[in-house]
Length: 312
Image 1 (tube, rainbow, N blue to C red):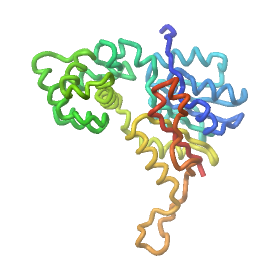
Image 2: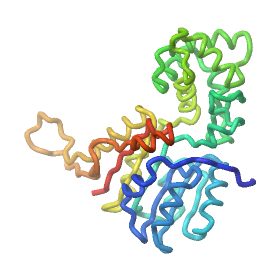
Image 3: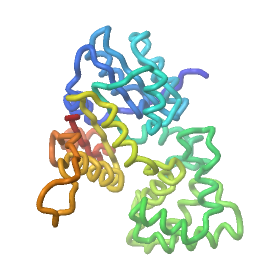
Image 4: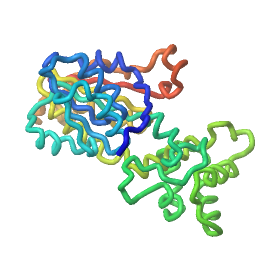
């Protein structure tokens, strides 16, 4: 496979590196490798004894990142795997504890701009949206086979789209006449499902986001991952998770809060009998957001939220 021009400007790069509190000889896990921007900085800021283990399910990303990290050959290992398989990956690497873990859930510029991937509502392309091109489920199957009620719930919950019911209803109505096989065909349905006043330039964004989340099961297993990841950190190790959707952020926030608790007993019990121990300290109670300067340069930074925790 040839090297692709996998462009992605890492958001809050400085904040992520500061959040990881890098140790010069540390071992780090980048679960969302992408084009390798964060991984490059981790390797650059650590010594020749420092190590990086990374995962991604997008083969284009892996090819591009491997080329980008070439100067650090021997210090990193990339697996075509989901970040949620962290325990299996660490077992393969014979690594017991990590000094830091990073996740950046932002979709890359390459994935959006590459027409054949079908992520963008701005370009006409086959409905796809698969991060892993070898998986069976695609946006085409979601749009053309899911029942109306299921489509409605996905668009409403994952997209927080107020016209979810009408969009789902019109998708089902349209596909009875012909297959919805392109991004623009889907856009036309979304547009017709809204009153003219709400047909703004990004009118299809929420629905496309919802379908992408469903196709890639982006929320499935996230809660369990955070528990597993924190367990894999050595004492003082840091975990940095950057989200771009309120549902992702809510899951991370809630797990961080639970891991920060030293007692989980019912509040009606006068003394602690649970034996629970605090496992995490939140470095900041509120998420870090991108600066106004960064948001002006990169519009995708506006929805980013970075949460940082440290293993007790």
